[in-house]
Structure formats: C-alpha cells, structure tokens
Image 1 (cartoon, rainbow, N blue to C red):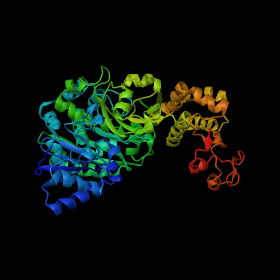
Image 2 (image 1 turned 60 degrees about the horizontal axis):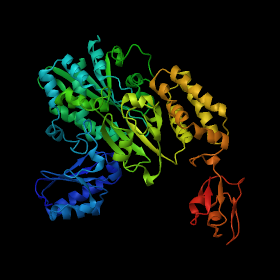
Image 3 (image 1 turned 60 degrees about the vertical axis):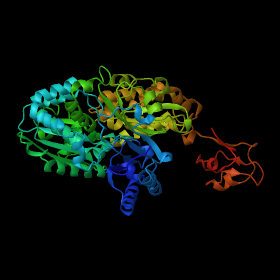
Image 4 (image 1 turned 180 degrees about the vertical axis):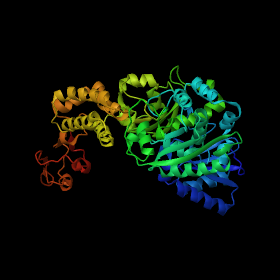
Length: 591
C-alpha cells in the first residue's frame, strides 16, 4: 500500500518498558535521519501501548492508518524510514499490525482507561485536548451539580479498581454529605503488588486523564485540594505528572476560579517510600500526615474523618482514569460494557510464564482463558498452564480447571482469589505452588506494619511452616495448621494486607493440596524447584565420560575418569544444578 510522506507522525514508545528496551536510542536515530534526509515528519515520544513484549515500538501514523513496528533498534528504524517514508512502502517484515489489520492481541481488547496510552505525547496538554481531554470537566462545571455528577457515576456502575471493588459513587456521596471545614480528593498511586504496573503506565502515558478525573471527583465531593500519593520508585510517572500539573495550571484547568466557574482546586504530589501497606487508604493517610504508614480503625471512615481528620475521598489511578470517559460519553455507554454487577473494563498486567506479557484492558466478563491464551498468546515454550495468580500477594492461585471463570468481581472472589488492582501472574508446569506461596508470604510478612499481632506474628509462623515443607521437613499436620493460622489471620487483622495475606497459601491448599503432600510424604517437589528435594543422577547409557560435569561441580561431588561413566555422591551434592546445565548429552537427570 502506498503512503504519503507529508503529514506523517512517528511515535516511539517511551514508557518505562520502552526506555528499558532502548526506545530513547531509537527516537534519537529517527531525529537524526529526519534532519539528514529532510523528512517532513513530526516525531513524538508516547507512553506504553501495552505491548511490552514488542518494545521498542515505533508507529508510523498517516491520515488514515497506523502502522506499528516492533523490536525496533537503530538499524531497523533507519530501514523502516527508508522503506516507509522514502519509498512509500511499509516495511512488512517488521510490521506488527496496522489499524486496518489489527493483531489478535488488540482485537479482543476494549480501551477506556488506556485509550490514550501509547497514542498521545503525555508531555503535551495539546495532544490530550485534541483527543477530547478536559471536555468532561467543562461539561461538569458548566451543566452539572455535584449530585448530578455522583448520580452519573452511580448509573455507570463504576466500582473501585484498586482491589475491593467498592462502588465509587457511594464513597463520593458519603464525602459530599460529610461536614467539614475542608475536604480532600486523594489519588492512591501506591502500586506495590509484585508484577503489577497498571497505575504506572497510566500515569506515564496519560497523566492529564487522571488529573481530570480528580478535578471531577473534587467538584463532586466539594474538595478544593487534591493529592496524588505516588511511590517514589516511579520517577518517570512523577516527572510527567509534575509537567502535566503545570500545563493544566497554565490553561486554568487547575487553580483558582477554574474556567471562570468559581471552582477552586489545587493539586500536588506526595512521594511515598514504597511501603506496600500504604496501599490501604487509612495507612496512606497516616503517611500523608508524616507518620509511619499504619492502618487506622474504621469507623470513622475517611469520608467522615480522613486526612487531618477532614472528609477525604480516596480512589486509585484506574478508577479516576475512567471518570472523564463516563462523564463525556454517558453512564449508559459505560454500563453497557461488562456484566450486570461488574460494569465496564478492567486493566491487567500480564506477567510470568506468558508469551505476550504487557498491559491489557478487557471488558468485564471475558474468561481467564481468553485473556491468557487469546490475548496473551499462551504459555512460554508451549508448556502446560498450571495456575494464574490474581490480586498479587493479597490474591490467590486459580488452577487450570477454572480457566473458564469470567473476569468479574463475584466470580473471581468465588475462587478464593481477588481481582485486586490487576496483577495477573501466569504459572506453568515448572512452578512449584509451595515455592510461590512462600514467595508471596515472605513479601507480605516483610511488608506488614506490625500493628496487628495476627498479621505480624501469624504470617511469620506460616512462612516458617512453608520453609520446612520446602526442604522436606514438613508434617501432614502442618497443612491443617496453615489453614487454621490463615483463617485466624484473616479474621484478626485490621487492614486488607493481613486480611488477604493468607490467600496464596489457602488457595494453594484448596487446589494443589496433593503438591503440598508430595513435599511432605514423598520428599519430592513435583515441579522440580525446591532444591533440597531434588536428586541429581547420571544416566550410565548416555554418559560418555567427558568430565565436563565434574569440572563444573563446585563441591567435587562427581566421581569418575575420562571415558567412563561418572557418579554423583548424593551426600556431597548441594543440588546447585551446574552439572545439569553443563552436560551436553542429556546424561544428567533431576528428580
């Protein structure tokens, strides 16, 4: 297909994933080629479009199409420019997809919260406005009362995307009706789940969207001040937010008498120190006040007594990113997506043993199977799917037999997992369920603030039991004790961290009990991951006596002479796996 040289835009993904993959070098090379050849091009950085597995990504945007190229480096960028710009022909061998022929990864998605990510330059307010940005704010201030805004959010069915799925309108309504000298609108961007990067990508790729959502929410509850609580480990997100705030002030979307409508709203950023517990709203408030992040007793809820004991509303990034779309397009349109009780879309960070890891946004009600296999491309190296961890350390492991579970709050909760903020860690047959439970429990154990005895000490006792099981020193009674401890911790903890910390263990015992029993009874790890339970042997029929395994053994546990079968001394073996890696003849076996 012929393309025109003029009025073209070249976009390069410069989210954190794109930069890490070399996107800045690609952008520099394109700028250099543009100047050298006199190309009539606009070259722009953009955020993550979600296809992290293809980074660096380069888009050629024409009047009627978008051509996306993946795995682009300096040399490929020059080739694409020569072919697509100079010779007017797309470079098909590097082409991922075009608008006319979308890839499977894109076809099943529906982007609302992420609609501008990877499309606009996040550092230019002009780009956001051209995509309809701030129209929802103009509509809100010009034609709607706070009660009407809240009613529109209620009709949309929007639920909090940060974990619990609490109705957004209810929190806003409670804050509006609360009495106080001052009210606050807070954005919870303290994304701490291992394997989760939804909030970061939205803030990096479309910061004005979140700012507009906060402005609308602030107007609805009667707040004149907003705070974005963002973890300091997100420097790019913070830098783009800071720039967006300044741009919004220049356009009078922030500050005093916004757009001449008498609405005042100031916005600032608070950098968090990265404590997982500060994702819980009352612990976040404590941190905002300069105290150690520890949860408060509820009631009173933040809507009645929050930041500095004033009415405070807290929503996460994704929730706020949906708000402008709902106001601009109407509650009915949002409510038409999803299921009866779970409306709209949900953003997930696909990671783990999956071919196409990245960010996806799907309509609620789609099955896990569709997300993992149709969108994510299935399991790496075509190994067998074993489980998917939803909800991070607070979530649970969903097994293969439940792959057809619809992605809704109710259906996911019924499995023992939770939707959470949207982390989706995929596991294959080589994943040990004892080991993965140990990993997540170790995380929550370290991140516990220590306020609640059950959470502080109970998670430590559970971790100790798991550690014993993983080295073959467990007892069958340990499984009952894990369940008893887990349920006690859930009941005896003040905040969501403790109440959900046992989930990875409890769902592991619910769906993979036989794997736990194998560690205890057979002293074997079926997945071959727990070092202490592995046995390395040498197959006499395959061993040619090359001595490579012996030379790579750090403890001299392998005996034998040249051209004779070698033997591993089991008492001396430390299960390091060096012999398995070194052997080129498949003679070393592990069980």
